[in-house]
Length: 84
Image (cartoon, rainbow, N blue to C red; front, top):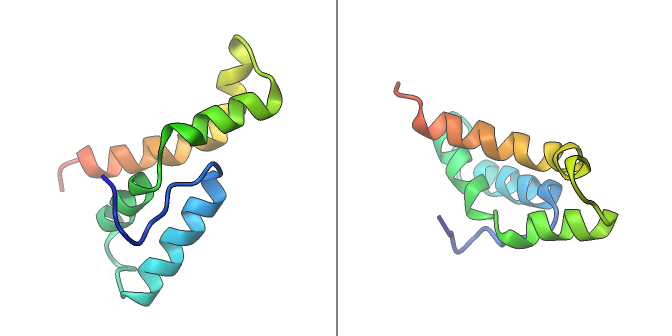
């Protein structure tokens, strides 16, 4: 789901900021499916890996620390897979 104007990042906040800026510049505010696609375009394995390694996580702690990363991803996937 790569997009040339959205750069993958190791921080979910940076990805969300990129998406908000791009959407505002291109007048996509009224389309949540486009927003979801752009968010997913910035997702890569370095997002999860950087969160896990930055905190030295193991076991169930991984799930708790990744919640702030996974929640927006899950919401975007739900948006794209829910019929209108």
